[in-house]
Length: 411
View (cartoon, rainbow, N blue to C red):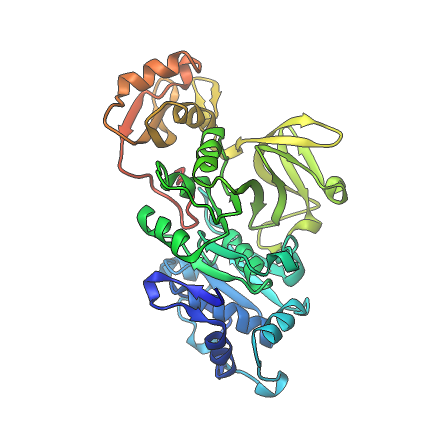
């Protein structure tokens, strides 16, 4: 299956020949890219690589006021420039395109904007080496077909894009589709690799089908709980499941086959732990408008399993911890416990201000059936977690709100 991109929202699959002709015939280039069309975003990135110009990726739903705050502008036509056709030869085929992309000079830059579960987006710029640090190029990867389950203008999506692009793989859009559409796209296109957030994977559940062609499942952006992993093993029986730790500021850093991460020996001296928080050395970072000295505080709290070699488990975002009457509550712990109750599909735990305790614990729950009630959830939790961690308010919803990158929206 040798197409470049299939996106059911935009018609027939786009071939590599179409992409190459489109790039060859492009006369102008604008470093700012703001589009909800996946092909436009991908073509824009490739064009920037070919002509050696910086690209600045903007979320398609950024408002004019957000754009002004982030970039100083809301309109970008004035930055359009003619492409110097004399600076590069026309591309002949897919092989030549990929070879040229793999040899991109390190002067090239890509700028993204952070978009976690909370906070104002911040600008981060990477060069080709830092953005492709963990791309694996090999003969065995040439026949992969990627299910693209991320926003294309954010770090996770960009890294999947480069993994597929530099190996000449087909890409099938899955992000933003319904569960039935996702199931159909996996089957119809013989997808072999999917990388997504746990929230995306839980969207597929429950599922009576099994998808035999999928060889690799990768999860990142949120904590991956054991229940979800076991459910995915049932519907993707031939897939190796990998958990990835990454950030916009540093890209992919660690990978694991469970929830325990280990540090590659060459990076051990670039990782520190301070009061339970993970710190990474500035040499691993892209340039940013975040004030970074030698060490960057990730805001991620971890549990150390072993010190030598360093192995750790992700606990929570520091900013997500909830103070309830002087007790610290990790919302991820409560979520993981609720998810072990049969019939629960997804859950979001959050806080609500309270004049006596400071905060109380609340949650939104997505169920598979109507057999779950508030009382059944609380009764179940009483034997699992301490009383102050049990939600005082429980709401049943059809779906959870997510961020631009497909993660559960925390605030």
